Amino acid sequence: MNSDHPINQITPWRFCRTWIMAPILVAIVSAASAAAPDDTGTHNDLINLFENFQEWKIAQSIDAIPDYSVVAIDRRRAELHLMQQSMKDMSARHWSVPEQVDYLTVRAELDQQDFILQVTRPWARDPVFYVANLFKTAFTELPADGKDLKNLQRQLRAIPATLSAARNNLTEVATDYADLAIRTLTTSDGVEDGYPYRVEPPAGIIGWYEDLLARAETQPELKPDISAAITAINHFQSWLTENRASMNGENGVGKEALDWFVQNALLLPYTSNEMAVLAQRELDRLWAFYALEQHRNRDLPELSMASSREEYQQRIAETDQLVRDFLVDDSFITIPDYIPNNWKMMFVGPYLTGYNVPWIVRKTPPNFWEQVQFRDPAPDHLHAVIPGHRSTR
View 1 (tube, rainbow, N blue to C red):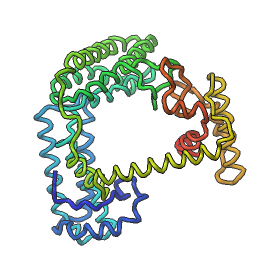
View 2 (view 1 turned 135 degrees about the vertical axis):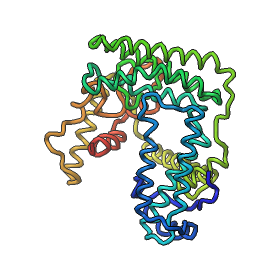
View 3 (view 1 turned 45 degrees about the horizontal axis):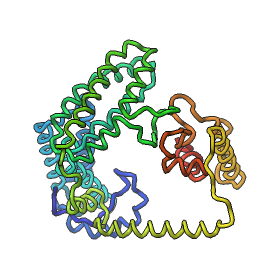
View 4 (view 1 turned 120 degrees about the vertical axis):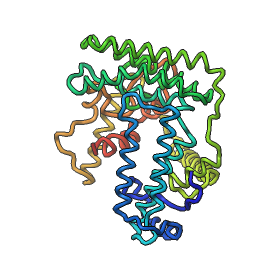
């Protein structure tokens, strides 16, 4: 990692989406511009470099079986280093403020990749790096045809080789990383956020591939590839379980590296200690507001959880109508007639489209989000449905 980067910078809007922090950029860029390079590269050169970087970043994910061997990683480190050297050829010191913002943003993007290649190295330290990438394939809707079918077959056939390579690459695994991977392979995470809806969630990734195999009754030509993938995933889980005791790698990056990442890759002007103080302050504020609300509502009965799917659906329907009436009656937004009420959208197709927390009866107590939603759907409904995320899709 380059140690000479100024730290008081913030991510801008042109290449990233944190434009809400733009008002403090002028002062930050002014402070950092003295350290900006004073060579001959133009802003167009920066744009070309960034476009090349974007292509470089996704190139590894295009292959069905990404190469994380020592040779491949060394090659990518060398390629990234050349791009970082090109940043020093820019004439950013004389650019406009928006252009300097772009310079700082591109440099932060490069620094983030540098941190991954040099410090976190998930392909060697974290088996979840491989495990998490298995979900999307298992969620594929069947029957598939055309391009979707070819992509599914390509992804399924890559799984055995990918997990075989993973066993060679994972040489510095921490025990808790192994535990998390084993749990993800074998156990529902209890949230299922973004997953297809099932009354009883499958048991981890292995369960989801068994779910895919069952759905392949409609497309039996996929069964051999799915079965081979399941065998490979089970072998990987067994390998993790059998070798867990010897997996004693470091499970963090250390304070110095974390501070560097926060200040360079995230462009936040804080140390990790300062961030911990800010976080504790906000937590204290939260508990204070919570205590005040409890006191204000002390004469009201505590909210109870819905006792059945039907009661929960009714609460959501009532919440949705209440929110829509408020938005329309108070002239905040209009809602076209073709946008259905949320309760009518529940469980449409294989995905849960109406809200974030489905009604699932578990052997374990309801998780955090279920505890909230089953009592009062309003907070998450406003946030995630209307006028929240889904209203903008």
